[in-house]
Length: 270
Image (cartoon, rainbow, N blue to C red; front, side):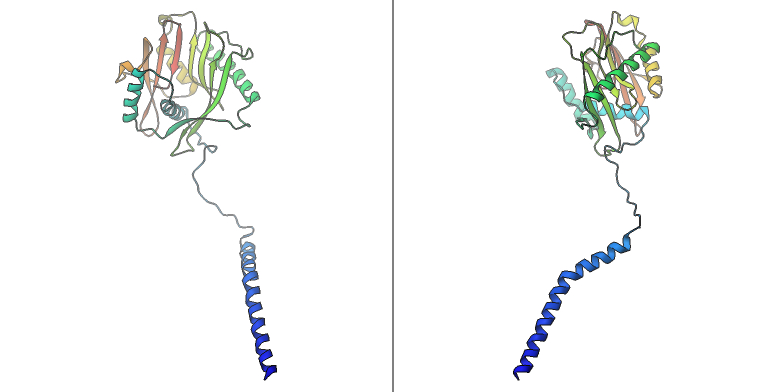
C-alpha cells in the first residue's frame, strides 16, 4: 500500500514539474517559431512623415507654410498692434502652423552658421544682379550678424515643413547694409529680406522687384492685393501682393519702406 502511495506522489510530482517546465519553456518555443517564420519577409507600413521627412514642396507652398508659421509667432508688440493681432487670431484658420527653433547639433553649430552666412553673401549678390536689391557691403566674416535656425511646420501635417535660417544684424548700429532676412536652409533662397541703403522709396520699383524676386524663388506671378485693414502695417509706404498658397489659400507679401532709416523690405509675414 505504501509503495502504491509513493508511486502516486511521484507521478503527481512529475506532472507538476512538467507543467512548470511547460509554462517556462513553451512561450520561448512559440516565440522562436514565429520569429523563424517571419525572417526574410519584408513588411511595408504606411505612416505620416515626421518633421524630418518633409515633402518636396514648391516655392508657393513654402511661402504659404512659412508665412502662416511667422504670423503665429508671438513677438513683443505695442498695445495697438496687440489688439489688431488678437482680431487676426480670432479670424485665422491656420493656427496649426508653428515656427520652432532647431537645436540639433548636426544642423545648428558654428560651422553650419558660418556656411549659412557665406551662402547669404552669394544670394545677396544674385538679387543685386537681378535688380531686386541695391549693392550692399555685406561681410559674412565680420561677426556683425546672428544666425538662428528654425523650422516652419504644419503641426497637423508635419511632412509640410520648411527649415530656414533667420539672420539679423547684431552689431552696434546699422546705417547701411542687410538688416535681416529669412533664408532657406537647403536651397539658400531668400524668402524675406530687409536692407538699408541711400535710396528713397521712389528709387525702388517695388512691383518690378517683387516680380523679379518671385522669379528668383520659382514662385507664381504676384497679384496686387488691397489689405482689408490698412492700419495693420507699420511702414509708412508699402504695396501688398498675393501669391497662390495651398488648398486654394493665398500668401500675402509686402514690399515697403521705412523712411526714417531708409530701409526697404520684402516680407511674407502679415
